Amino acid sequence: MARLLSIRPAAGVVCLAILAACSSETNELDAAGIAAAVPAALAPEDPASVTDVVCPQTVDRGTGIVVTCSAQVGGTPVTATVEQLDDEGRLVIETTTVLLDRGDIATGLGDRLQAELGVLVGVDCDEPRVVVPAAGDEFGCTATDEAGRPIELVVRLLDAAGAYEVRPA
Image 1: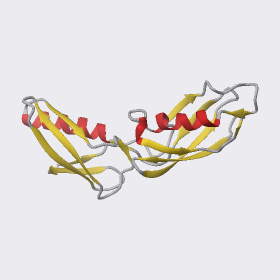
Image 2: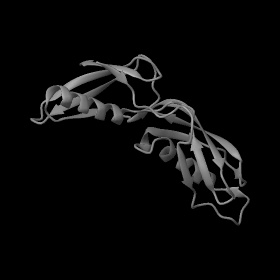
Image 3: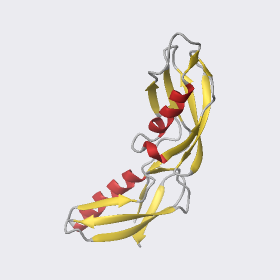
Image 4: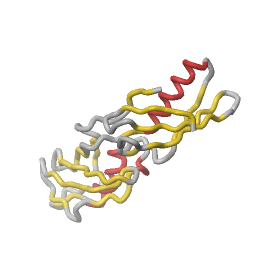
């Protein structure tokens, strides 16, 4: 069974964050606060999927100033841009990298199996929940029916743009 992935758009605003640690008494933003905001901005469903965030040590305050941070999402390097919207520390944190939420695949598989089998089916997929999709990547999911019987599945990504197929493990 093949179907389109649920992915984030490759461009556009991922998150608008307000940094409370920013003080108007300095000409710099809280660089550690910016780095701490990146995981929740890129993967709000599972910020733990975003690791090894590195941002500039100092970030000057000013509307329109943009800095670049690097991070790992599910073990794959990504770049996040952080743009200041104003002098109060309001930021837009975004990435042009396509991110895949495996939780969305699990939900879709559960819905499809329920429609085909006529019984409620819950599906859980391997961690990390949020990854950068690549053609040929595979991960496991476990579908469990109302009686608690598990069915092991393998999801194989067909391309980085969004298609996948599912087969029994």
